[in-house]
Amino acid sequence: MTTFAEKFKKNVIPAMQKEWGFKNVHAVPQITKVIINAGIGKVMTTNPSNSKDYLERVQRALIAIAGQKPSIRNAKQSISSFKLREGTPVGLMITLRGTRKEDFIERFVNISLPRMRDFWGIPLKNFDERGNLNYGIKEHNIFPEVSQEVSGKPFGLEISFITNAAKREQAISLFKLLGFPLKKE
Image (cartoon, rainbow, N blue to C red; front, side, top):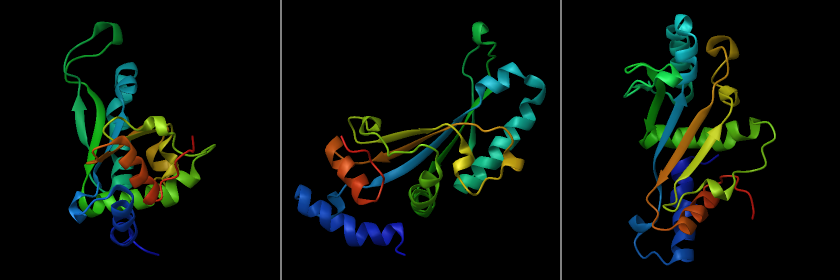
């Protein structure tokens, strides 16, 4: 089985150069980083007595998924209608680059997405105009690294694949060549 880096060098670069006419290898678009977000604000505001325990469980699950400790994102201002106070943790974020990024993409495409219930492909509407792919997951249980006993209640994730593509169409062909299961229009 080839790794992500080998697949990119041997298959993706020549195909993108042929399809889009890139003369330089470094001009070929690539995924620069992967950002994983988990929102925990609702649990933190509704049940403050168990909030610290819940935060630790979500952190442990994200460490197992990404192999890196998440940074805690706090509320910037108080909003009384949401029972939110300034400084309350509302989310966790991880930015992956380099080999961790490549390993995560490989596991996400080959192992996690096939485990998802009722999955028929990633819709093309999830691409923005810059070619970044944003995909939401309702339950983190699709990742085999996380056990239900350790992480407790399922939580959702937002995964953003950031590219340096100039056009949306270039990014779509990049993701197709990398093996992402995209829906056909």
